[in-house]
Image (cartoon, rainbow, N blue to C red; front, side, top):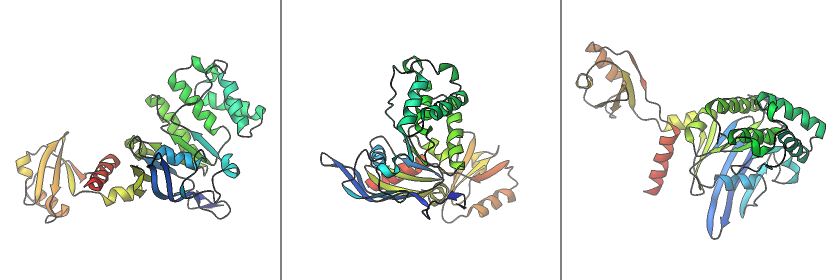
Length: 311
C-alpha cells in the first residue's frame, strides 16, 4: 500500500536506520556516533566535504565495512545477504571491466544480482536506447568516453530494479544534458516508491534533488532534516529589492543597504520588521519593481554550521 507518497513494506516506513554508528581506522574515527533515519520513497542527501565520512557510512550500509559500534537497519534487517539484492550501489571509484563489451558487462552485472541473462540483456538494451548508447552496445568499455562509462555504470547499478539506490557523486564526468537525463531517471525511481541516497560534496546539486539531507563533517552529523525546514531555520532578515532607486534613497533606521549583483540587499535589525520597512519605502513613493526574502542556500548553511562548531 501507499501512504502519503511513501511506500510501506511489512509495516516499516524507514528504508534505513543508523543508531550511534562508529567506524575507526588507525585510531581515527571516520564515522563518529552517526544516527539518522532515511524514509522510503525519497531522495536523501548525504552531504559534506571530501573526507567527511560519507563514503565510509555508505560502505557500512552496503556491508563492505562492519561498524565498530552502533546498529544499522535496512528495510528492518541488518546489512548482509538478506537485503543485498535490494540495493544498487554506484561508488565514486568506478569499477567497469574495460576489456568487456558494454552489453556483456551489463548482462554480467545483472546476473550478479539474480537477473536471468535473457532478461538482463532486454533491460540493458532498453536502458542503452534511453541513454543514447545503443550503438555502443558491442563496443568495449575502454572505447567509451568518461561520460559514457558513467552512464553504463549507472545502468549496471539499477538493472536489477533495486529498492534502495545509493549514488556516490553520480554526476561526475557528465555534461549538463546527461546530468538532466540522469536526474530524470532518479526521479522516476522515486516516483515508483524507491529510495535514493545521493552522496555529494556539491551542495547545489543536492539542493535541487533532495527532500531530506544529512550534513556530515569530520565523521559527525552536524545537521539533518527537511531541506526547506533547514533553510527556514537559518533564514536571515535580508530583503532583495529590484529598483532603480539610489542606495541613499533606500536607507532607514535599522536597515543596512547594499547594491549587489543587479539587486539591492537590505539587512534588517531586530528593531525593524520587513513589513514596516517596505511600508516606509512605499510611503516615500520609491519605485520598487520586485521584492522578496533572500533565500539562504545549503552551502552557506553548511559553512555557518562548521564555522560555529570550530569556535
